[in-house]
Image (cartoon, rainbow, N blue to C red; front, side, top):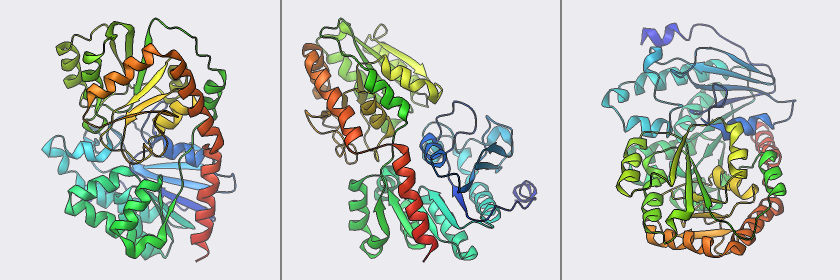
Length: 410
């Protein structure tokens, strides 16, 4: 434990009227997809708000303080550099803990270092903003000690894990109890939290994530031709079990028009080797392309070159990849799960298939090949949905400012 204290030696003061953000995911190097939605929110906060981001260090970076206008990023060390693999990897902390057993040994030092760093950088803050339940727990404790209000943002996986694990349920319940305000990104998960924890239902509000204007620009320029020889599918996300990429590959093996399809898998992760084995098993070498991890700045161009987004996740919150595809004028085929079916309306803004039913997914893909007008109609409706509901980061940031102001005045 001496090692942790050694790397937390200096005390840095935050300016007054500031927000301290505790998050296990944040883009620490150019092009990193880790926690990009957290970064987008903070970038759209008003200039009057000074923000300090407290996040784990990564084996991929070396700086200790990253400047960025009104945003200062402070990565905390929790292990020798080569072993800092608990966060900022595909799937984040939950997936890392399911990997090598030795990684679990890093957890006590990780949590201790997080708490120490949060204590230091919360000095002078007006509000602590935590992302995910585990950060809500730590920020809640520090908030009590510092007498600071805490806003905790919870996402779909926080709720899903709490249903399968007593420890995760305790973490979620404690984060709710210690937080002044709790934000969820979808109405579905807000309702579930209120059902599970009615005692704290009055703390829970919904603030949807937004999209960057670059995606809306893609949607505004999109032109859907009447007849296409190749249907270009795209899936964006980490290659982890929860994302259900194996369902997409199995569906492709059942498509009648398989030779008229190309699938671009954008993202990386521990499932890649297994998925490559499936591609070989289903003889999809000419159809499936593993795009790997790409800089976030390139995603709008990739969506502009695609015809349809496919999401086969087993659980989600309110996936940004779907919102970005809709803003880009793409129809989305997705699993019919909470959070997703709030924004994908069957036969209106996209198509929903039963989780675990790749045959139904295959039928939908074939239907879009047969009916190009359906692609155009669904894509236009999806684009209009984003505009009609004003799902942009500026509006999201404004709602968070209101939340910060409310808790700071309590």
